Image (tube, rainbow over the protein chains, first blue to last red):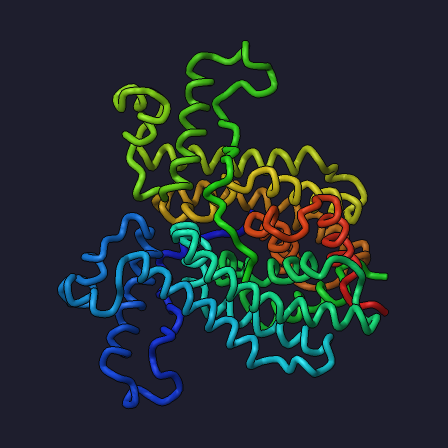
Length: 220
Length: 220
């Protein structure tokens, strides 16, 4: 069981919306882009605090100071709003990992970089990551499939590195998927215990996790 | 990110309620004991499927074929129902781990037993464990503190073993809490990916995870 504390009190840092014009500075964003960002940010906070099912479109409209009818200019439905949020979160995470690694580099070195990036990503995105876990099941099957496809791409970055290192004889044998899920589980779990009463020094966590993953806990 | 699929379709296996007379067989159970179990089982399924906030006491009453008023014979409120469920889950998990280990045995051997037990527990309790994660924040602070106290006892079983093995010089240095959260993260994460399209052979998962944890992934 995890160390837990209420994460509902945290300030949500929702995923950046896909529809905005990233990296060009606020001035280059269209009005609808920034307004959509605001809607997504508000929805992330309210969905996480109240739960998706208990949140109405009116709640989000009120929070951003819009009429319900105007909100439908940006989103088609409440399902659509949740889907946009979760998709933006997973695509941002995937892009973040992709930026940190060179798929043609030494696989073990790249795996270390990917793990460091995963730890950073989870710590910086606890609320949207929690929302993703808690509300994934709230989406209809077709939209889950779309998210699952992006997640597969995400996971495959790790699996590819594991397989390459195995081929080089530098990594333990064993089903790559299980190895990757083990590593990601260690990192993803941070969303529940990071920043509780216990040690939360990010660099210390990375060092311990990397030593555990690469060398194991047993002293020989 | 995890491999995910909808877990709402799974058959819920809720934690056994604390109020029942365990291990004495159905005949020894009081009528209210078995009825409470039924209420908890129903609530676990409905809370997990619809979300806590969107579920009414009437939903649970209807599911177990009782009048709403009669339900209040077993529970004080919806909050109380959720609290009873989550407490039963964590106490059951704690008791399960405690049964599998001998705190006076060789710490590394016992740690291996505890990890095996944790994997079994998560795999066998995916739905109540998910409910725990998703709805912990729905409880008021005082009740969260009560759960946190039981979780600390739970985690401390692992921390004690890590510390003992460190003192014997058999285990890597490093903050025991971080090491334990890393190990538990690997195991707990199974609630999201076990039984998806990929390999779900429990013994295979245990072997890979134990090799990763004890010896690390890097071949030397």
